[in-house]
Image (cartoon, rainbow, N blue to C red):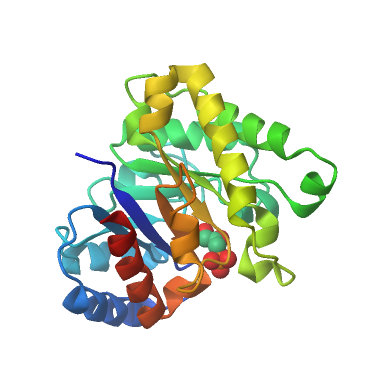
Length: 258
Ligand code: 13P
């Protein structure tokens, strides 16, 4: 069996519980059961529990956008992976907005990846360089460092439960001045990610690990990104908020796959 293609929608801080539920209802109704395309949505924390009762897990899955690495305790305002266990199948970890707006460092990202796996939640580990890091020629070092620390506590037998998402910060639509990453630029970094994975876990494992791309993905460019060698899926923000666009991208993923 070939690898799955992932289509992940990160809703960020959008949609209240009611709006999230209506979106999910409409999407599920229109969505066939695609076995080789894994559709995932990441609503706000507040909507996860009710949506977990509504979701048809044969058609799609839920992700949290973030969680804290300690299971319980005096951590005001946090939600733990332990509390999300059974509610979500995935969690986005180390998104650039968490790193740059909320000051999450590589060490914390590594601890979160470990906590997710411990609680049977698949981490979607986000890595990617900023515009200035790219302009100083630091892309390879930044991506490598983020990968090494994100996977610090991941043993070889667990790496198949981790997804990597390459999101160049300068290509994310909400940065306000985003540029589109060219398929060649994406291919180059994805190659580098697999090289690092190969150093850590061997070539076979590196090839079998799923690597997603994110950054201003929409229905017009989704096909091009999905055919970049080594890309196994897409992580989108803006386009996932528009149901028809998200459904189109799922369709494109299905067509590219077959
Ligand atoms: P956009 O698709 O809006 O550029 O957002 C990408 C992203 O940050 C997904 O996590």
